[in-house]
Image 1 (cartoon, rainbow, N blue to C red):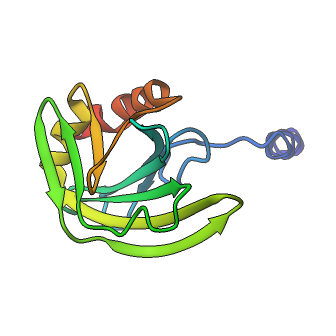
Image 2 (image 1 turned 30 degrees about the vertical axis):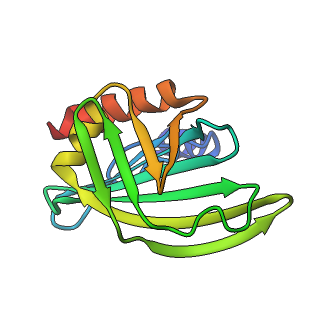
Image 3 (image 1 turned 45 degrees about the vertical axis):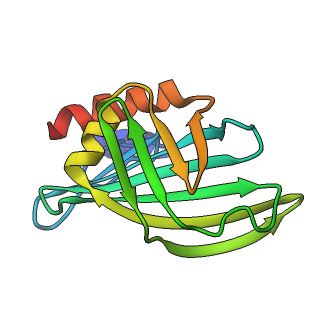
Length: 170
């Protein structure tokens, strides 16, 4: 009994975590939670995209309740050097699999950080369409008419999402 207590104290002091377990992981781009009804809630991202003009950055993350919803929530932050660059009109996920568009978004906040203007929005998209987008090549995100392509660390983050989420929900 005494040795078991010492081992437990040692493990606790080492900061042992259970990433992506029912309690929620603390590492990496994918966090998985098991809800009371037995469904899985996935938080994925952020994925960095850069505008083709290199003037704007977009960070997007996704939330999906597998077997509990047919909707994926896409939360994204737009960073722009221009105050009026993002009067939201349209959000599009475009890939070799097709296009998903929505004309409505919820603005969470807008702020000024240094010389950058940040806008945080949320949109809902159909889960089956989102899954086709995530599995496809040549992904582009369009906000209004501004096109964004995958940025740094995209492949590493997408690899984790593919291995931990896409594989599990197919």
